[in-house]
Length: 352
Image (tube, rainbow, N blue to C red; front, side):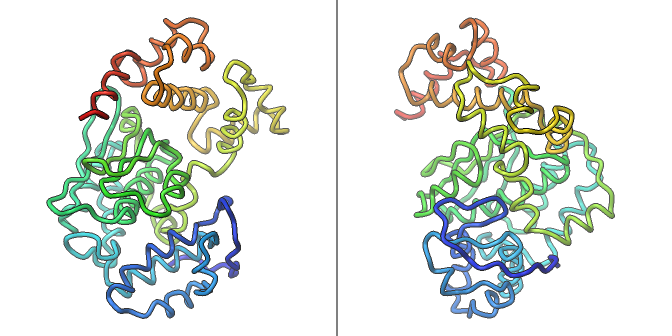
């Protein structure tokens, strides 16, 4: 059970601050109960959520409130996946999966075990992990019409949240594809994942750097008990891309042209913290300053090549590369392709 915290009122917000969840995501979670004619008020009351304020389009709730609501819905439906699978995910299933993967030697084997156990429990969607061109991709296979966007988002929250906890760090994503149409809260989906999000795709996929699959797993039974005690609130917040010192560094870099990015010591001064403290906090969150800069350059390079017809040399210069050849080498490391080959691939996919 989650720790109870003091109730926080829902408040309007154009963009939720850290540790907050949008009301739209809460309403999506409650929809399966409403479709079954179940009363949602007891669940909201236990989570200390005002149902009238929840109806406001631009309100938000705390992660702890959402976590309590999530547990209440699972109990009411007797399904931790809220009826979105081919079979019910009975309460206690997520705990069983966590215990089953705890002794995995590395993240790759832990993820494959997680996906196999989820398939045994819910049958569909069936998750499969593949590795190609330096990328790890989890694809959801289905023999049914597309599920709701929330169904895929809930699946990714379980899998990605568990993976981050097992690895002891945030695992940044390269992209998230949804098989179904874009929901009215599509903007929240993009904000939540902190990665390119697309809808109406042939399959739902989650993509990340394959190098993470080699990360060792070293979690104790005591640590697992603490993790489960605070789930799912800790999953929803702790490993979000917009939390921690990492988010502050990204915000500064995103508002500065790459050619003018400060070095590490200068960034520490900008943030008004000692360089040793910044290094330690970033390490605790699982990334280095160099990795963050690399991720931002990579994301911008992918977007520029896929969405514009600008010259590769111009893109390289804008991203702060001294020579186009340096950009080519970096892009091959990111994708296994040359910038030109990547652009042609994206153009072919778009016209298919």
